Amino acid sequence: MGNLVSQALNKANMGIMIVDRQLKVVVWNGWLERLTGKSREEVVGKNLLEVCPRFKSNVYLNILQNALYHGQSRFCSSALHKAFILPSEGEDEHLIRQNMHVEPLYQEDRCYALIQITDMTNMNTRVYKLKNLIKELETEYTKIKISEKISKHMSLHDPLTGLPNRLAYNDRLAWAISNAQRSDSKLAVMFVDADGFKQVNDTYGHDVGDQVLLEMAKRLSETIPTTDTVARLGGDEFIILSHLKDDHDAHIIAKQLEAAFSTHFKIAGNYINLSISIGISLFPKHGQEPSELLRHADRAMYKIKKNGKNGYGIFEPESDE
Amino acid sequence: MLNDLQKDLLTELVNVYVGQAANMLSEIVDKRIVLNIPEVELISISDVDPGDRRYNIFFSEGHLFRSSLQFGYEFQGKAFLMFPVEQAKVLANICLGELGETVIPADPSLMDTDLDVLKEVSNVLLNAIIGEFGNFLEIKLEYVLPDIELIYVTNSDQQILLQNEVYVLVLHTSFLLADTDVTGIIVIALSMNSISSLLAKMDALLEADHG
Picture 1 (cartoon, rainbow over the protein chains, first blue to last red):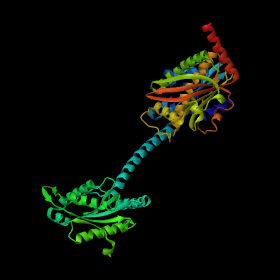
Picture 2: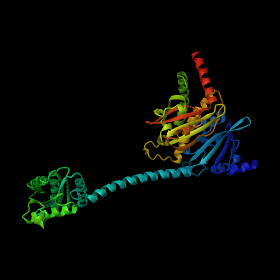
Picture 3: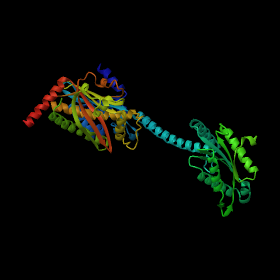
Picture 4: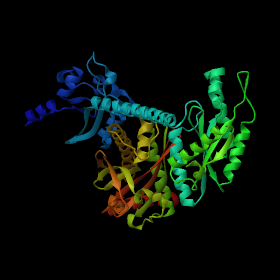
């Protein structure tokens, strides 16, 4: 039986050591032999502090005293203590992580402390790798969220002026129509086109043309009420969505827009005069669908262009047919 | 169930015990840890008012870290240290020197190393308290390592936490470390005989002091 127990102790996949009240090593198993390179014959009978210098620390001495004299059991976590029994020379002790259990043992009137050491190195390494991975994933996730935000903004905004683009405008118009249907309110869709913009580009170049477009966007945005939307469809075409109390309000807004372009632009030392043509369709009067309202506003704008530009016109269904 | 004098004496005794445990923990984690037990009560769980905030941990739903340590024989019972999981995670993080890390309340995932750290903390703390009760009563105690578990408590089963235990000593615990205040509770469920011997010993001590 004694031989069986001793075989089992040596085959156990953990360090098992027993010390007496004088801290003399009584049992030193095979696992400890393999780790430290110190054989049982070398160690048994020696003082633990001589064999394992880490136990000289007050914390561990107290733990052993409490087990040997007060019957206390103690658990020490590898996360806090790292290692208790150091490996044979040549191995990196800083990579070793061990859990330790200390429990009292009694035989007749004598008391011993059973010290069990479990290798946690791999588990600790896995946990820290996992923690690092989680941190990396969190950072990646934040980056992805930011770039999602940027790409969403880019997909819905005009890169030159920063105004909403056609896609965003269509979305807002559809939303505004369904809202207006519910609340029984009115809207105006205003197509705004610069008169003679091609000539600006031809005369001053595209850089100045871009500056003019930026200035146009600024004047349009500053003129309309803050609850309304101005979008750039492309080129020199802009479109405005206005919330109206009455259809007549469309005239007032159109006149204010005209007035906003009555003064010249001063760009790169050039004084540039630019008028605008505005075509307007009204909801619900001229249609219920976004595409219908846009088409009618476009028609009204085309009519203004045809009749000499620089002005605004409201869609007239009969005459347009 | 405890009169004012008994309560004061027990609070003082327990604070001395946990003070020693805190010193030991401070030495291990190399950080200053202050442990307070502001109040000690001897109650019957069935008498606890669910509206009393001090007993939130018994009556609120949620994940709970619980460590329990059985001790016996003459002074017999079971001691529990309980924290809501988020608080347990903060405590483990601080002990591991990961103070800067924020804990997401919805996901306080405790890793194996965190559980080992909490096992050691509760081992030190419960050993200190139970051990000193043994010294106070001049009784030799035998106890094993604490069992730790993560449990989910629902509104209906808080009582199950402490079922079959009639009277319990409740120690409201607060860990003060590095600008954080981690609060938990220590509950020591005692057999009737053990309660009687504890009260008798305290009364004898008070009698000697106050005549």
